[in-house]
Length: 561
Image (cartoon, rainbow, N blue to C red; front, side):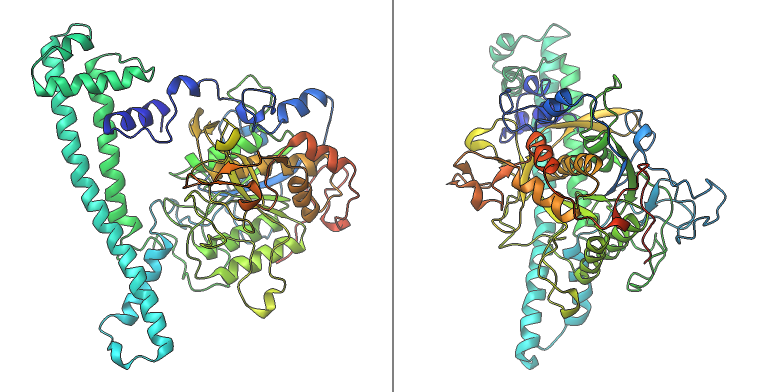
C-alpha cells in the first residue's frame, strides 16, 4: 500500500501512531545500506563495503526465498533468478528426476495440479479449532479425566480467541461504515460549498455548517503533515478507497482468517495428512499473491548498479523461488517440503519471512531444519511483528526443536532469527512492532520503510521483520560468496559476533520501558557488513567439501532425500 494512503487513513481516523510523514519517506530508498555516521545510524554499511571493495568478485550463491511467490520477470530481478538447467522448460517431463515437473525457477507447494494457487487461507489457530471442535462439541465435561479436561480447556481458549476475533471484525466493519458516512458527507458538503473553487481551509472554517467544519479539520490534518491536497475530488477518491479496503480487510477475517468452515486445501488436491508426500503443487512461482516475496527478493538480490530502482545487498546471487505462503498462515507440511526442495537443489541460504503462533506439525519442520543443517544450509527467519517476547510466547518456525528424542540437540545451529530496527537510531532504534527475545532472537537488522521490488516492474516501501530477515540473508550470501569454505554455523556466528552494538538502553517493543539490548536479543546488536566481512576473512572454514560451492561457482551436487 502506498505510503500516502496509509498516512491519509491515519489522519482521517485520528491515529498517527507509527506513521511518519510522507516527505520523510522520500529520502529512505537506500537508508539501510548506509553507515552509523550517516543520518541513519542503524544502516548496515553495505554501501561502504562495496565502495571499498569495488573489484571484489565472488562465487554465485543460490538463496531460496520461501515466501508468497516472486515476480521472476521484474527487470531488477530477472538477471538474478535461479534457473534449473537440468530441466527442459515446458515439456511436462521431470527431466532431472527430482520429483518436480518443469521446476525451472523453483516450486509452488500451494499450487493446484492444473494451475492456480491457494490465495486466501485461514490461520493455524482457526484450523486447530475447527479440528478440535468436532471432538469436543457436546462432550460431557463432568466425565472427562484430568488429562482430557486440560485438553478441553485448551480447546475452549482457542474457541474464545476465534469467536472474539470474529466479533471484533464485525464491530470494526460497523465502526468503519459509521466513520465513512461522517467523512464522506463532510467532504461532499465541502465540494458543494466550494463550487469548484480552489480549496481554502480558512473559507471552510468560516462556514457554520457542521459537515463543512469536519471537512476543514480533515484537510488541515492532511496538509499539516506535508501532503498536498490536489482537489476535493482527489480526497474523496482516496478516502473511498481506504474505507473500502478497511471493510474488505475485516470481511477477510470473517470469510477466511477466522472462519472454521473454510478449507483452502481442496485447491492443492493432496491429502494433507500424508506427510510422506512431497511431490504436489505446480511450477507457478508467481501466483496471485507475490507482493511480499518479490519485495523480500529485491532486498536480498536486486541487480546492483543497473540504473534501475534499487540495489540488493548481495551481488553474486541466484534467487530460487519457493511458494509456500498464502494470504494467511502457511502450513507446516509445505514449509518442511520447501526447505527440503531448497537443500536438494543447491541453495546455501534460505530466507523465511513468515511465522505463526501455532505449529501442529512442528516435527516435520524440525526434521527439515536438521536436514538443512546436515547439508550446511543456513536458514534466516523473521522473528515476527507482534511486539512480543518470543521466549515467553513462541512463534513458529523456531530454532528450538520439539521434544522428540530423534530430533537430537535442543537448538538449530543453522537457524538465525532476526528482529527489526528503524532508521532513527538511539533509544527508539528497535522497531515498535518487532518481536524480541533474550534467547529467541539472534540479531537485529533494518526492517522499517525498506524500499524494494514489487510485482509488475514496480517498487514500494514495506516494514516488518519480513524485511529485516532478507537484509541478513543478503549479508549471509555475501559472506558465503567470498568465503565459501565457511560453514552455515560459522556464518551465523560471524553475523552475530560482528554485529554493531545498539545503544546501552533501548525502548522495549510494545512498551515505554528502557532496557538493555541484550534483553531483546542474544547479540544485542545490528548486523554490520564491514565488520562481518572482516571477521569472515580471518576465520578458518569448516564447511565439508561436498557442501561447498565448487571452484567454478556452480552449485554443489544436490543432496538426496
